[in-house]
Amino acid sequence: MKYVIFDDQKWENFFPLTLTRSTGDLRVGILKLRQRISAYFELDKTNLIIFSSLEKIYRERHPEWIINLLSNEDTIFINSRLKVDDELVEAINNLDENTCLVHKKEVLAFRTQPEVQKISSEEIAALPAKLEKIKWEPESTWNYTWELIAANSKYIERDFQDFFYDKDNYFETEQGTTVINPYNVWLGEGTKLAPGVVLDATEGPIILDENVKIMPNAVLVGPVYVGKNSVIKIGAKIYEGTSVGPNCKIGGEVEETIIQAYTNKQHDGFLGHSYLGEWINIGADTNNSDLRNDYGNVSMFFYPQNKKVDTKQQSVGTVIGDHSKTGINCTINIGAVIGVDCNLFGRDLIINHVPSFRWGTMSTLIEHEIDKFCETAKAVKARRNQPFTVNEKELYSNIHQIVFGKN
Image (tube, rainbow, N blue to C red; front, side, top):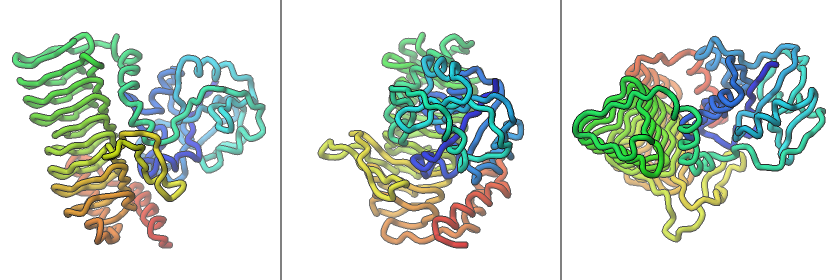
């Protein structure tokens, strides 16, 4: 049996984050959605169907993966937005050929022997269209970015129990560190804790992956995950529900926030109930709001409807796309969405929606020219010994053209 994980048309629900990545590469808890599906189905190969705009960079970054290619054999297709659990795994594995598991009108998974060999997410809906439908009652997919933020604490705890609790634990602390409830703490090989560090796992697990560095007097309150090679700066306060991806540098105060990878928030300032992409830099004393003064539901800009919608959540901070930056002392209002490659500074309150490739204050935003962006992105990635490739330039150029309606 072959398994393929596919992105569907609801990738737009997660813009601007999915302008530059597969929906399956969104993180919630410790793992990305795709990683969790692969683990539950015990997949040893990665077969993906993604949108054509992402195909070149995914082939470049993951040459061993099978991307947007099918073979004429019995195949189970799994939606990358699936909230996978044991019951769903059993139901999907038991699908008969030419059947489709659906929740209302939403395709969760289907089994068929495809005739096409080359396909992308733009065309995926045609494959299950004529298959026999099998109803699945529980709501079982992720639909909005703010859902990922709200569920992050729960999924850190779940992933800890499922994937880390029984793994080799390199638990070793230096004199002067404080660990509360050590049985709820997992340290990867090469991780270092400086004197004065406090790990409080009373209310949830703390997982520090390989080669993490926690600098003096930082306090982490679980559930918290810090990814490989990341650094938590001196005196940082990392509260529950925070997932930091690999190769990040994080300081100040962070709560209930997901950070993908290669992002810096090194200085003081509050970041709460937010979702950040990659290659972002948050300036010193940048703060965001995550709660309305009247404690009402937060509204947030939603790309498919091109307007703000009710998140039905009381606490939502900001969503920031890849390669965006804030200057010193920036203030981000509750529910603000900042697109790809925005460079924001000044005293103006950052509100509502900042479209991609914008530069300036909220009252004086101008276009950030693509050539200037590419120069900066090349310099930023070089600092981490990463190339800014021709395929990346093409992806961002295409986004820029769409944003500004250029041919």
